[in-house]
Length: 317
Image 1: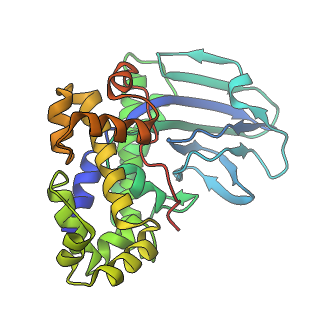
Image 2: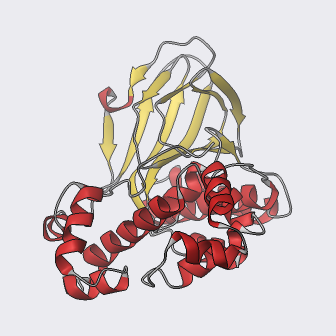
């Protein structure tokens, strides 16, 4: 069931590009990217090299490398360690499309070309999955390297020329590479805390699978513990240790995340949404939704498709 839930999460990223940029940079140069909570930021070097600095952790990248900054942390990319940086949005740019632009920094030194961007997501499980990821996530070099390299070559070619649709091709291939990097990490990662650790726990995983199959069922601590084959106290302690939050807090948070997606994307009547997430009273559902998201369901729906970080709370360690 762990595999099914993870597959569903990866399939249902609900990814939306916040921005994409193809850059041609000549040394000396440096770009400071601001914090972008609720996004995955990626950098794909198509020619040359650069240094990525995320909270003092540096990664040297060369042509063909792709690195994710999964938590939207503010960071810098430079031609060399110590180079002066300019805030990203202070740089001149050519707008190719609504969310696609080209950056050029002239200079006397070696050239670097890259494609970078930030993507948001609406999938209910995605935020929890990403919280399990490290602060910096480079692409693996495993069995998928060949087709990833092919995608990289297409992105590089499209980013160097202004053909009709180049922005669309570049953005879509970049999105695919982002998901693939996450998927490759999942195949080798063994975190001991966080959502992924909970799914892979042989006892907690059973309870989580049962809950996610029927989130609107009348779940209690006792019924969840029963699915895991544990006492209530042992289950609660193990759940809190692995996932960083009490079981029923997790149930409420997941239901409210699901409700937010149903309200915004499916435009269901509120009574139907309340029923699907386990509330028999529409008034009780409205109160719970407002506590979780700060606004009523109606106001939330009117906000449109802008990204909301759906899973506040303790960070997965």
